Image (cartoon, rainbow, N blue to C red):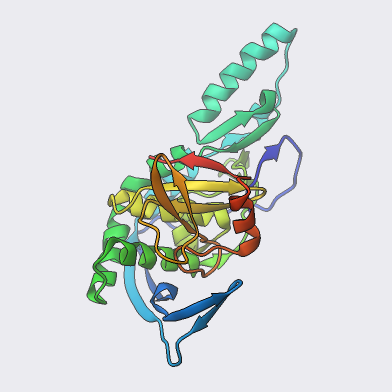
Length: 283
């Protein structure tokens, strides 16, 4: 779910980080892109009889110090969002200062300081380095299963992220000092992959950070109503849902649930056809 946060008081549970030692996690998933689809009937894929999906598995290792650092680098104290001012000039000055400070921590300030959202490009740029080893491991696991083309490898990453549990993050986290930190309903990709859950934009951020960390494919985000999905710069195939952006094809990828590359739910695709979407370019 796409979050835009207004300055509203919420009471939320304390998040406790336990242990900083390196840890490894085993992942096993099926790649929905390897099914043999005969045709589509609306949102339903008609499969060839006996069609099966490839299974991929790998072990990923994470340094908990990196995870904690990523979490702490993202978000702004709720106290920053309350501004005291003497006149409109003073307010404008303090809003500009807040906009700058929030931008250093991955949060965009909109609508005159009363609306905040995630800076997706900031999150991806900050996350690529720490996810590069994990991305190489996932790519190697896919190649051991015979994956070779860019599209096949992108499908392996997409199916990996899709199989993480769908769960909506809170608008806040609580730091070790008990301070409420505004995160606008997102998590850093390192946190998402270690917790193994997220919603549409959080999972899309993980996907983009993984594939961009190894320069596998260019990614943009498509925002429609309260939903977000990704576009990958690949040549569109027959039956693909895609858009034209910057003179190129961008194949659409739904990451909140298991959908093959190039297919998104028709209710969202109708909005695409009508041009009711925004595009976010990513580094």
